[in-house]
Image (cartoon, rainbow, N blue to C red; front, side, top):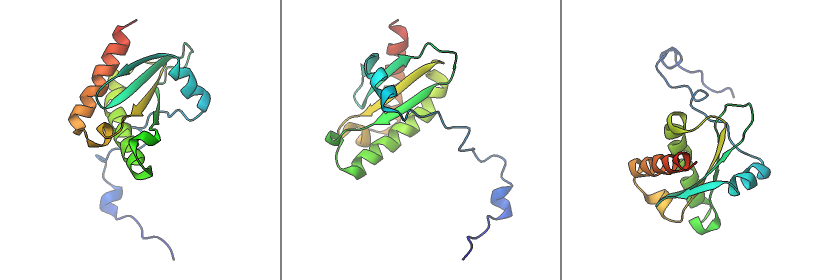
Length: 134
């Protein structure tokens, strides 16, 4: 069985956001997370943000996400990480510094249940504090 073809109306929509253009490079190696854990951090009501200046020639802003089992079961952890990913997509392109790695750590109950506009405000606040505290 072959999958249905996309309709011409959906394929021709030029205003649809591209998933590739809004994606940030993601941290995947444990060593990157450990290096960020030794760098600066800022806590907010809904998350902990760690920031590390890589001091290399790559200007990309990279981001990683994590939630411990304190956040809840797998469903709760995945929901919290999805919300953190969307917040990072919305805030980091405008407020992140080039050449930095960020790790967003979810908090129990707060990350999944906080209103999204407050979650965005928490991330902006954390970035402002981290960048201003040089």
